Image (cartoon, rainbow, N blue to C red; front, side, top):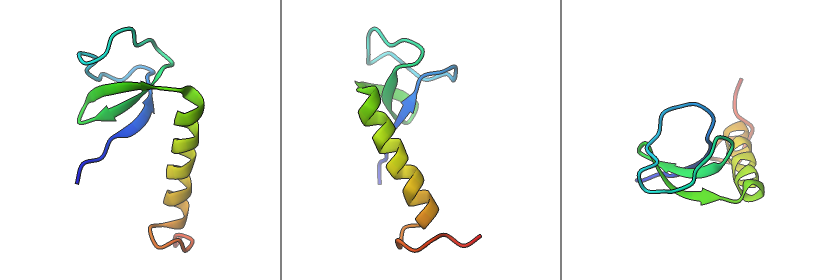
Length: 66
């Protein structure tokens, strides 16, 4: 299974070889260390909120055990 996730570019080292004009604060799709495409900040934040919700409920949809 392959997974690409939205990330905000802050300081960590990722490869920007596939993209031009990426600045600190931009959101990109990250896959195995490579930024694949830039994202709209609003859409990126919505996707990250959904990931956070999934993490809280677990894959089954039930609340995660503490």
